[in-house]
Length: 484
Image 1 (cartoon, rainbow, N blue to C red):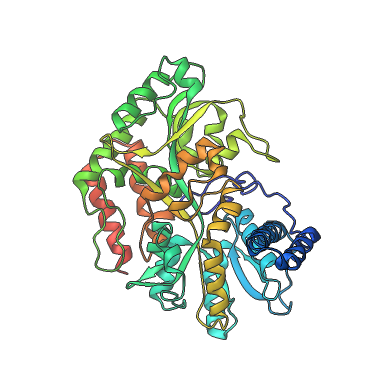
Image 2: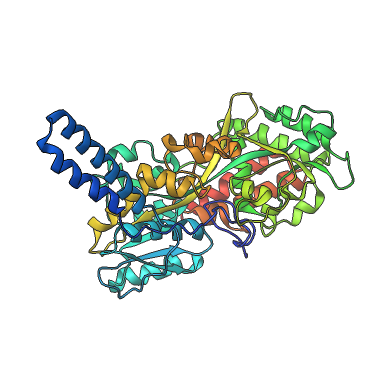
């Protein structure tokens, strides 16, 4: 599919999924000469009273420090670094992810580290595993690699990555995105850090709420409220539906419907051979009953049955859906931003957490990429420096947040850029409760169009099959796959 990949959702073409406002922030050439003059003056005046000299020197140092910081402003655009450049680190990143964010991080690093710049190469997403396998066999591996976080367990369990547990800054890791950390960890040892994050959330169209007589400032807090609000909106105008779930997109559903199951305590995928799939059917079935009801009552556009993800990210911005689970990227896609034309900039909408059956229970799919070091790399120390760099306070705020992306540390969401964009503050709350499926066979179990996850959901949405049987069949298929 021509879709964006981020550990779950496979949405619209990447050209539409612009999560960042990439701006030309140029590194300053040098410090203001006035700072040098002030410092010199302070030294000369040391012959005067010591108090005056101390005050002047302190002022000079403060001015020089401020000027120096301005001169080192992080650049987020730059010319690519050649692989044969002196001191270059080689980094592979998959296509179909958030290239704008990765490009910006590499440019920021290169501006601060001209003696060891990163040469970034994009590898076709579907070819990444084979490319790495060949590299591991021949020794032709990169020094850094960005990978879809859901594949972390497959690589770490196969001993294909270098451990960084005791090398990365533990203070920075203390608040790192929990879903990324979980998938980068194997047997209590860490093999990577978050590169970028996407989260799922519930979006609601305030204009349609108001037209339906609902309070536009009050979103649903549980699935019963969501049903009732969707029913009130459904059909108020031609082509308007209360809710949306794509019927032929496995990744879209784990991204937006999976969290409803998690919020109710349900467990879907088995992690490894011998593990149990669909372990809590009593907590899964009520959520499936709710989804079937939404379809049977006509609250979801019947055309959604053929949605394979190619146009998923554009649905909410059409203005014809009252409530929909989607991702943080839809804020920019709908509203636009500097240099980015929004799909529907005049539409009023809100963002909240994806609820479960009970008020107070909520969940989110935490997707994105982790950055890791393949076995065979001889630049582990430099690679870890890059990991610490992208986790630093400065980069979290002046690159991630400034470009309107999710920060990858939960304690960095309180920043001036999010404060200017309240919707980003709302969606950022999903980072702390975000979950990421942990399994050695994510594609076969969840993301495959022919896999048991989508097969189960299509029976839920579009048949009258007994739901207990549907769950039991999915359980059997998933356990058969994981135990192969």
